Image 1 (spheres, protein in one colour):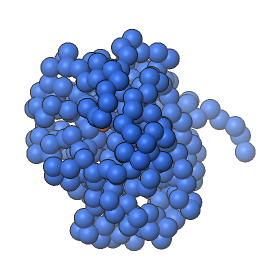
Image 2: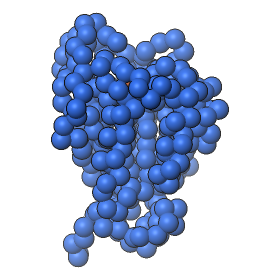
Image 3: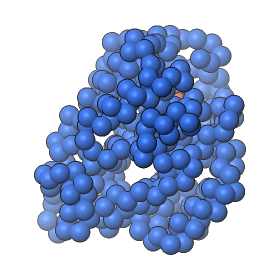
Length: 287
Ligand SMILES: [Fe+2]
């Protein structure tokens, strides 16, 4: 079988490219996950000493510098930190300018009504399926009102099971909160409270190749049976892996890249800025 460079791909319009890749070649589709940007309406807004719009732009520039450009972007929550329409409007316009399909999920810091109003179809809400070539991307909103933790309602889980019964194509599930413990006591208290129900669905449906999430502000990779569980670094500040208490890591921000092959194979890696000019503040107890 001939070798090929997964980073060299069909050069067409983005929408045509996705269909061409699905039907005509074994070239992988490149999906980039950016998460937890914690943007502000004010371009100079800072969180823990990080100007979050500046760090988001830095990571986005790195993410878009590859050739060819990505086929789609996935943003897994905590999009806007200060609950402002201006924060969501900035994000909408920034994503539109990139010109590739993009999908946004809400996190515990997001306001669903503002997401719906300002991100339109890019933020499809409770449960939604989007096609990526021969793959399916299923988006779940795991946020719960007035809580940092996540939960999936029975309505969502039933709908998800229906989608999986109907759709046998290789699938990714994306949500904000982590559905299984990652070994960090403080943040494991605020994952998906009923994440075990999601993992049971993964056991029953072999087409689910990976569950992608944000929220944990760190690289994470584990397996649940044959399904990958993948967390990604935030585009702003990072949490220290394995820490029992809230702790800030000084490792630079980044994103996760996924290469999705038409035959269901998946390759993934985390890519980080080599360095970032602002250092995060080390606060005790949270932010
Ligand atoms: Fe976050």
